[in-house]
Amino acid sequence: MALFRIARRTHLTPAEAWRRLTDWERHGDSVPLTRIIVKTPPPTGVGTVFVARTGLGPVGFDDPMEIIRWQPPTVDTPGACRLEKRGRAITGWAEIEVGGSGPGSYVIWREELRVRGLPRALDGMTERAGRMVFGRALKVLLRDQPC
Image (cartoon, rainbow, N blue to C red; front, top):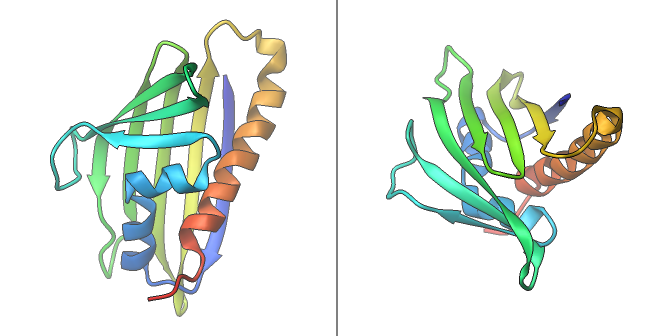
């Protein structure tokens, strides 16, 4: 099991950072060779299910996830979202926390990632790969975009 944590600060308000980070389809734009399919109707909340399909052509794998905690940020409390990964190839969980920080906000992404069949001796490599992939995703999702 690979456990990692990524922290970022942004000039975005907590509400806008939360909106961007929980727009699940946009995650596919930030992770190479991945597309996201939301399986449940809006709005997003506890019980929402989506699948990240990673691959090239017919070769790939599905990473199904379900939201088990959904608490958007308020003026007084940070937002928190927890996803359970329920795939055959990848299991674990991810948590996203978004709160106010000065004129902007902070984001903390925590994840426990397990790749079935991968020896524990490779957990360090899995952690580094996860940190790189999801660090890039945060950068893309939180960057300035034209209106």
